[in-house]
Amino acid sequence: MYPEIEPHRSGRLDVGDGHRMHWEVCGAPDGKPVVVLHGGPGGGCGPGWRRYFDPDAYRIVLFDQRGCGRSTPSAGEPDADLTTNTTHHLVADVELLRRHLGVERWMVFGGSWGSTLGLAYAELHPERVTELVLFSVGTTTHREVEWITQDMRRVFPEQWERFRAGVPAADRDGRLVDAYSRLLHDPDPTVRARAALDWCRWEEAHVEVGHARPDPRYADPEFRLAFARLVTHYWRHGAWFADGELLRNAVRLNGIPGALVHGRSDVSTPPDTAWHLAQVWADAELRLVDDAGHGGRGAVADVLVEVTDRFAGR
Figure 1 (cartoon, helix red, strand yellow):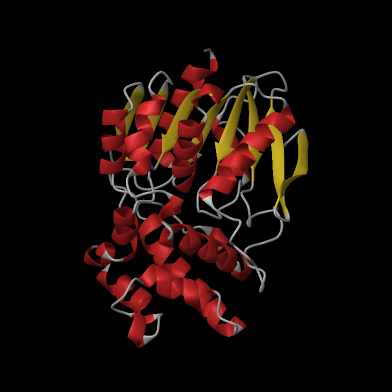
Figure 2 (tube, one colour):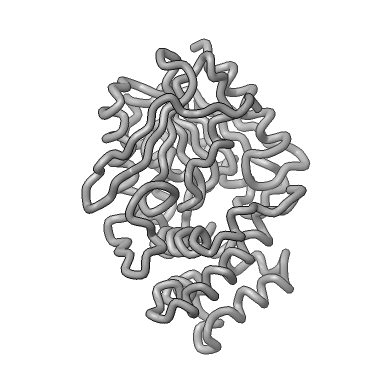
């Protein structure tokens, strides 16, 4: 990956509904524009997201999605209202930011949850996308959510039993993502904090497979609550798409060059999602990376830099 860099422009954009979105621009002011869509939902655009791009070739645009990072208000606030925090709101925010920065067309780059958001944006605004690069690919279908919250008990039985035990006994045989969402909005701050901790411990169990160290963000109680609230909010609603809609509509991406980069050992978002997407999107190059799990580190990062270097000259 490229060395760490700092933004040369930043600000907060009023996107409506009381939300102010933090954005920043790094790299070459006249370079090839790329917008970066972080994971989570609720992960925020940390400095590591800047390092996939040659700073002499790219104008790198990053932002914190509604409710997280430096955007306000935080989804972790006691009275946070998430009704105006949906995938459709986020897609509109990306377009508003594009116009605000005077960008005509740009590369779209997203990972994990950001791959869902990237697909949604590119399918709605294909004329604005020069290339689409996605990694740890997911589409937030009901089946994918059930895999992460229920079926992976077969892979992590001990950790899943602790995760299941975090909800009231009456809810343990139901949909855990719904039960956790209720706990995360409980009037008692102690209940909310405990649910956020339990949720993030489960996230850590499956996301961090194959990584040398745990994600330090999970040590922050404020991050945990905002993150867990946003993840459960988006997952329980299937990202506000009909089940399988993003995959069916991927034919709209034909004509857009792109890459799908996925760890073959990714247990959070299994590789078959990326494979099925590549069967519909004819211009996508599918790269399955052996001995790699979820996220954009290690060998996956090497492939992503290779891809962005190649697209830098287009």
